[in-house]
Structure formats: C-alpha cells, structure tokens
Amino acid sequence: MNSTKKVLLINTHLNYPNWSEGKLNDAFHQIAKEFFISKGFEVLETKVEDGYDADQEVEKHIAADVIILQTPINWFGAPWIYKKYVDEVFNSGLASAKFLSGDGRTREDLTKQYGTGGKMQGKKFMVCSTWNAPKASFDDSDQILFEGRSTADVLIQITSNYRFCGVDIVPDYNCFDIFKDGDIVGTLENYPAHLEKVFNI
Image 1 (cartoon, rainbow, N blue to C red):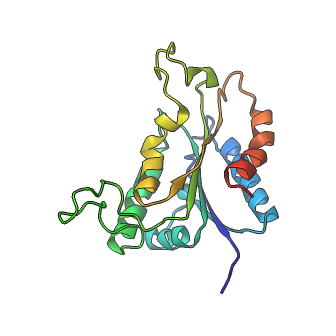
Image 2 (spheres, rainbow, N blue to C red; image 1 turned 45 degrees about the vertical axis):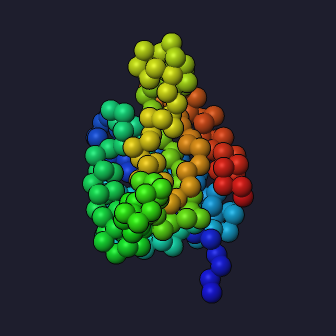
C-alpha cells in the first residue's frame, strides 16, 4: 500500500489580459507545491481555467489528504469558473456516492443534522486567496462593508461545500490590498510557515 500523503492544489484564477493575469496566484501555488514536495507529499494539481474532467477531479479529491484552493477574490467570491467546477465535480461526487450520501438527515433519526452525510472525514481543506480589500476591513464592527465579519465568514460559501462532505476546514491564508499597499512580498515569504502550522507538518 502506498503510504505517501497527497495534496491537491486547485488554482482557479481566471485570466483577464492586461488587468489580472494570475502571476500572484501562480506564485502562491508554486510555493505550496514546493513546500509539500519538501515534506514528502505527492502533489496533484488542477488549473481550472485549463479544463478538467469532473470524474477525474473526484478521484483526485478522494486520493488527497490535503486540498488547497488558490483563488483571487473577484466581487467577493471566487471566479465564476470555480462555481462551475464545484457544481460539476461535487455533483459527480454525489452521483457516485464518493463524496457523500445525502445531506445527513434521516426520517428515522430526527436528531441527525443537515450537512452530516459526508464521506470525506480525515481530509483537510484550506483557502489561500488574494484580495483588493485591506486586512483592516475584517474583524472590525466599525467597518461599513463587512460589519465585523472575518475572512472565514466571507469565504463560507467556498468552505461549506467541503464541510458538507465531511472535510475539516483549516484557517485560510490571505494576501490583502494587492493593488495598493499590501505586503505581497512578506505574505509570500510567510506562506510556508502558515502551511506548516495549520497542517501540523
């Protein structure tokens, strides 16, 4: 039996020529790849914009111990191609019953909660994202837009898909204020330390 741990790196940047060409998200992706290789992991990769087979993506998810989504935040969510990816891949995982079997509720046991039917326990999922928003706009009830919400709160529409399937969610990592005064270099440099901490490796 192959005991090598596996990580699935999903890059869902959508290229907009002369405006957003994906170099920063690619940089984070490469840092994660090099980090996990250095820790003895086998690296599985998907660049959503390049195309994918939904059934094969299901198998990558099943094989992976760790799953990381690398994404820009465009209009407060991942690019539309990621929603399409999720719809197709998670529907395949539902149809094959490899990700989950129903939503967890049963008529026989009314104490079972919605969102407890997942089959992917033991796996871990993390979002690494790039934002125009400054860090100061989060976790502060005086901020008009997010009203005290954290990045985890804003990213819940992404992480809930995995939690619904039984995956553990680890703290996200974010590069803020990328078009103005963000510390891009420092955030890139500190990424391996975050990975080491949240995945305990």
